[in-house]
Image 1 (cartoon, helix red, strand yellow):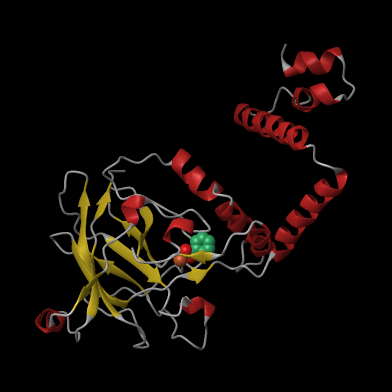
Image 2 (image 1 turned 180 degrees about the horizontal axis):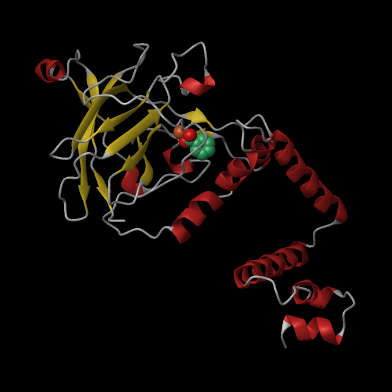
Length: 296
Ligand code: BEZ
Ligand code: FE
């Protein structure tokens, strides 16, 4: 029997038919996709309440929690996205809606610290504007799935300093646009830049999502990473990170953003001649990282 038939046969509430009754109320003009999504959501919500035998007090606590999440949102703080992140939903929606070939650079969460219109720099520029931290060279290529260079691709990069803060979290302490910038690949698809080794840091955890993490016995620390958005003409834009392999939080990222293919090799270089080639003093860190783009 369809939900419509169930609701028509007996329109009054009872526990056994609760979800079918709600879904049977949808009008004929309801767009098909909305009908599909709402039917699944209502079915699962009703099933969860029945399975966990949620009490009125517990349901009110849930409503208060969601209300707090809403109150925490401002132009700068999106607590609902943070909630989606820590529930693994942001990563899941991305996986379901953006199927990518195995060989392509994997995507991961954007996060709240991206800034549009970062400065454009020539290759080799140092994005660390305050000279603090352990020097790091990031170099590599942007290629297509066949390994051919993608010239003129934009490599938009941002990261924390060595204390685990983004510039936007420390206005007046870090210079504006510290540790962020946009680089462009040359004819060989190559890019390179100087930076510093990033550090792990907590996601914003002074709100309801932070309280939820604490209640669940979870920590808020994202493993040390560097963010990238790579854009090439005629290619799908990829939003991704690279992760430092030695970070103690690698296996317990609160937002589930780590993918095995995104764990990079941060090599410590002692060779003074090599350091001079990059205009640095040894020792420094070096990550070689290629991005593989998929045709649009
Ligand atoms: C970030 O890596 O910047 C981030 C991602 C998701 C939630 C919070 C921060
Ligand atoms: Fe981040």
